[in-house]
Amino acid sequence: GRRKIEIKIIENEDDRPISFLKCCTRIYMKTFELSTLFGSDILFILFSPTGKPYSFRHHSVESVAKRFWNPNQSLNETTHAPVEADRKVRINLLVKDFNEVHD
Image (cartoon, rainbow, N blue to C red; front, side, top):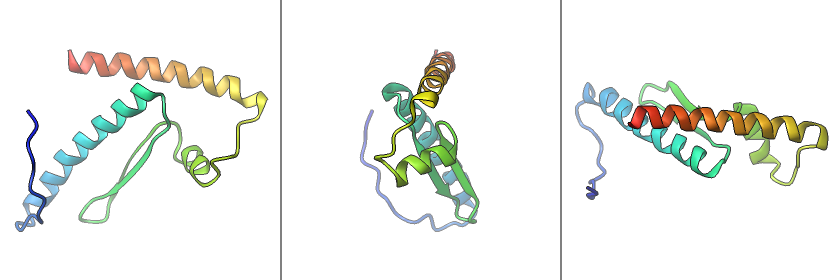
């Protein structure tokens, strides 16, 4: 069930990478779930304690970042239909993969 987790720094430096990867995996799963459930574009970047970047993205980093920096910019009519079709196919495949993993 749910429980409150105390947030504090992990003192043992050898334990940090292991805890980071476990946490990163859970965050990836939740990010994937949100992207799938809502059909949303998500860009999530996380830096490890050693400075290595980890990212989850729906579509490319560039396309999501452009939409973030220019939220009012819409797709033009010639690109919207193919992008939307690709998005639906990818979402269906992701849902299928997600369901297989959780069954």
